[in-house]
Length: 103
Image 1 (spheres, one colour):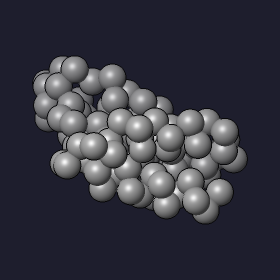
Image 2 (cartoon, one colour):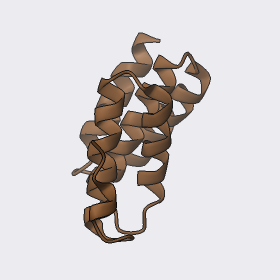
Image 3 (cartoon, rainbow, N blue to C red):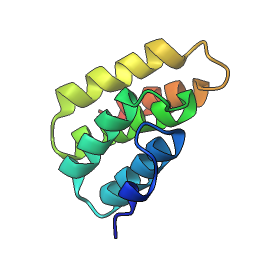
């Protein structure tokens, strides 16, 4: 059940709710919906950097699972570029590198 309407629009809690719903959809193999959620999370004005990075990871995986490998690679390459020197987010750069190596 989707309870996102229960949180204030534009709030950090809304971004968190989108995040949970997005991963739930991804795990249910509803990749198109998860992709839409991941893109919406990244545009949210109150999302924290860690959640934004995790949403980019969700975006890359959903694109991969939709056989949109070129787009997935573009997102992964951007993650490597954007997070490699960020101590808090370097984990995502490392994961993106490993995913690119498997393609």
